Image 1: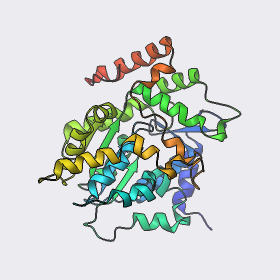
Image 2: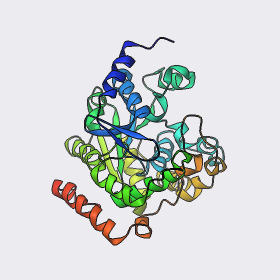
Image 3: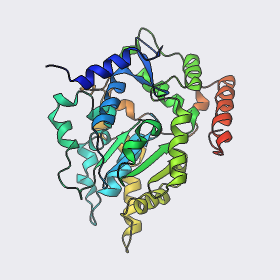
Length: 327
């Protein structure tokens, strides 16, 4: 099949971009001050050229390994709930969260032309239907697209040390890096320097937070730790933000059921989420998306010197921007 001029132009552009070795044979390419694996860079460029959000869209934005899978389950359950939800036949029993809420750049726009299911998902059949999509693309790159209509954005972030450890464990699940593993000391240095997929982490978080402060009616910003501490409160708040509040005599019961059903313990024990099989279009097994889901797990892996190094960057980047978080 003949390649489009747009694709050829992007390939010419990408060949001239700054590159850095990540792990295994993987290179990261610097595009608009952020780092991407080549496949996701090309998909991101397709998103920028082709994706047209509509007002009813809900976009779940996040840096990798900050609670995305959990938020996908929560968002789908909040938006698609019914007064008498049968949790024995809930969509999350027969579908993985990433299938119900696919990512723009890691799913829908990767070889999109060869997959009718992806094209079907992107089609807007009824403008009144709520379409939930996910992305790791930084706001600095995707902001113009997101602001082209009144769609809603939910952004979740996580303590930088736990984010790094979750990402580090995630990478270990891929056989692509068996011969050249991502050593933890190297991972710490690269994370602090921003040279990780979709990094720098700090710039990613701060831009979405800044947009939330400017337009809280457009962007809902929440931390993984906040939801873990009080999940019922944040399920209620997200419902209000999305225009589907929990009301009436059954409202509190609905919230409790969603929190219970979408808990890490329940989702990780679903047979399909325990599978060690590889998806067709992703190099990690299905069970790699469910590890521990704990707050503070970094203490079991990072040495004091590593913690101090990450904390120093966190204070400079976050605390220096009036976001006192992460230390």
